[in-house]
Image (cartoon, rainbow over the protein chains, first blue to last red):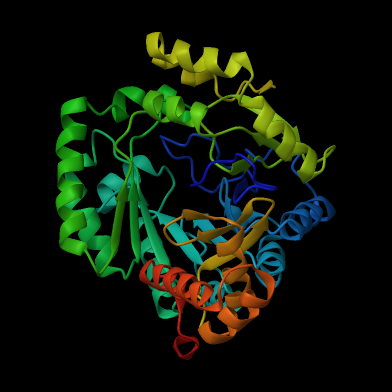
Amino acid sequence: MGSSEDLTAPLYVAWQVTNECNLACLHCIEESGPGKAFKDELGRAQVFDVIDQLMDHQVPYLSFSGGEPMLHPHFFEMVERVCARGGELKIETNGHYLTQENCERLKELGVKAVQVSLDGASAATFGRMRVRGNFDLTLAGVRNLHAAAVPIEINFSPAAFNIHEADAIVDLAYELGAVSFYSGRTMFTGNAVKAWRHLAVSEEQYKTYFDVLRRKADECRGKMRVYFHEAGLLEELRYRLKNPAALLIVLPNGLVKLINALPFVCGDFRRQTLTEIWANFRRAWQDPRVAKFIDDLASDPGQTRTLHQWVSV
Amino acid sequence: MQLAKHVKFREEKFGGVLFETRSEKVFTLNATAAAVVREIAAGHDQKEIAVRLADRFSGSPAAIEREVAGLIGDLQQKGLVEDSARG
């Protein structure tokens, strides 16, 4: 992702369209779940206004996530609006609503890819992470995507109880027809704070895990891209402080975050235009509170537990 | 010749950016490179682009033709530009 310097608008907008979810995953950084929609989520006219602003400014790439984005009451209308205006759109879903009909519709509308979270290569590990989730239904959904010729991406979040499946999950992603596989480190925030004793992965385990992924990336070369992000959160944030990505994180209520792993909010689509928010985004990265928060993470990594206590900058 | 399917181009004050949305890689373009990409996006082939840019930029037509060919070759190598026949 490129630097934001001198650009007239972001290059990527990651939009959490709703906080409602049918699952209640142990590691969910958004603390999504059944009945967890924000009370002030954007309405139909507001979401279309945001989409139109993004398209007017030629933002080339968007993702819809959540919560579960397919639970948004205007999900398909939003997809249609973005795709019809030439935006490249990725859907990040838990895969439980990927019926044959929905997959065919996503193909017809022209989404760039659908990323499905598959945090286990077996029903046992999947079910442990993805509370209320159904492994077989998720696999069926991915197969429906493949049948409809929608490009598939698989995301895997490691935890103490599933990290041994590294080999198997990459193989499963390939068998399902994925074009890309993504992984990284699971963050200590959101639901993960309470469940950390079940999730926590040691540095030694991570080292073995990333070694496996390196090998799998070589094995899959030319067939499926295997992406993984080895850097720890502190290293990533220190880099971003100097090189902010041209990326806006939009929350379900229209607030805009600097980056997911920081509590700082730099705009509000209910009250500000994209141009105003983008100007403030670039200024906000220079706010001393941002640098201080990142510095403090070095001595207290646990302060990521406060990411949902938003701070305006 | 056209921009590859998942490549988006946006003009900027400094020139432009190409965004390869599959790899999420961003390529920053200076004003000359942006002018070439604009012509590719408009559907012109390499020869037409060289002629059109020779009308707008100073320099010998031969030098401009070489620069255009070099840039297009680079874009093709990076998978940012493809033959129109590929769809």
